[in-house]
Figure 1 (spheres, rainbow, N blue to C red):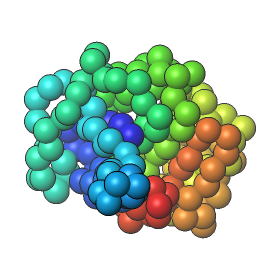
Figure 2: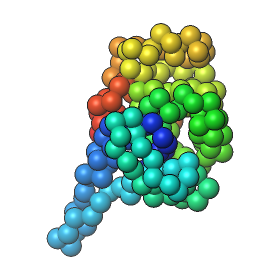
Figure 3: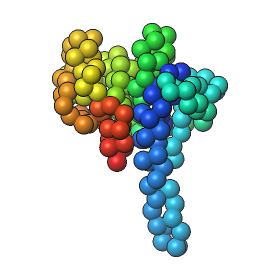
Figure 4: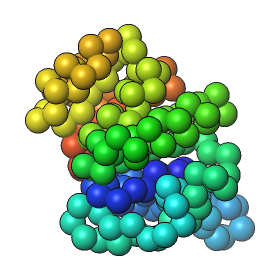
Length: 169
């Protein structure tokens, strides 16, 4: 499970799904429990980044050296609406889309995922406060503003903050 990390991401959009996946264990049949998922934070660079709340995260990998992923999650945050950051995330998602089974956004992470065009014609959701603006910016989306999360094909979108945990579960 890879989560994209960038300056001014929302810390809970990143940490909530990460903790939900990291908390899943299975019995290996030998009396021991093993993690079901490997969770990594993929930074735009290798440098630590500060979230909107000031919490600092250290990326495990960068976009240049990230391993193949089963699931990619794009957290929300003001930083994703910075054009240079958004372009880098969009280009990276497009380069990885065919090799990734699931791609998800949490809250305003939809600004990165929708900008790829991969959500055009699909049902989506985001935080209710941003739903009308996202629908204006990306008129080809079928916005479901009251949904907690939505799955349409290989794409998953969720409402705000704690809905990212529900999505991960």
